[in-house]
Amino acid sequence: MAVQRPFLRTPGFWVIVLAALIAGAAGIYAASSRYSPAPAADGVVEQFFRTALPDAAGKPVDMGAFRQKTVVINFWAPWCAPCVEEMPELTALADEVRSRNIHFVGIGIDSATNIRDFSAKVPVSYPLAVAGFSGTELARAFGNTVGALPFTVIVTPEGNISYRKTGQVTQAELKTALGI
Image 1 (tube, one colour):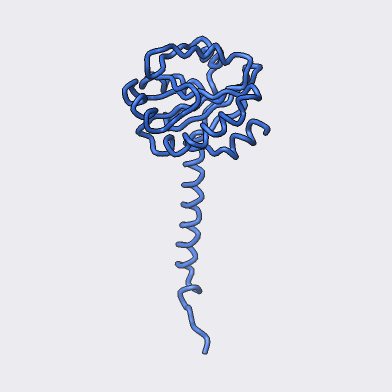
Image 2 (tube, one colour):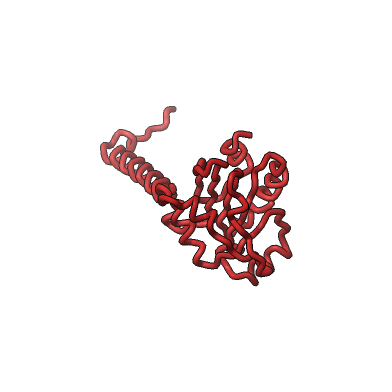
């Protein structure tokens, strides 16, 4: 005996299904638009290279040292769960590609104390600079208008931005973006 589903034949059911599909598509579009980086500000790469920020011990990290190198810039914070989750992968990749003139730098959006405490628990092999909440302005200049973390940028040796992502990044994504 066949199961009857008379509700499938009613126009009201299909209107609800169509409305749900449209709402879902609109939500996906809004989320992807909201978290897609905006165009970077003119001169932001030069601004980055002119920046020196302290590390957690107060020693300056001169971003100009990354000039004419490929640099992966990761804006993060110790209180950001996706940031903390991606750190071991970023560290492993940084170690793997260092001989290829590819360098990583973390720009911490927090206090030196919190970044120092984090570093004691989670080993990171690349420099971690302390920008505090003012680091969000540099991230914003790179196109992170929503201020979400993590936010990752790749700058080529020629000083061009080749990759930007708001949200957690994986080794595979970065390897593809780096062409390795």
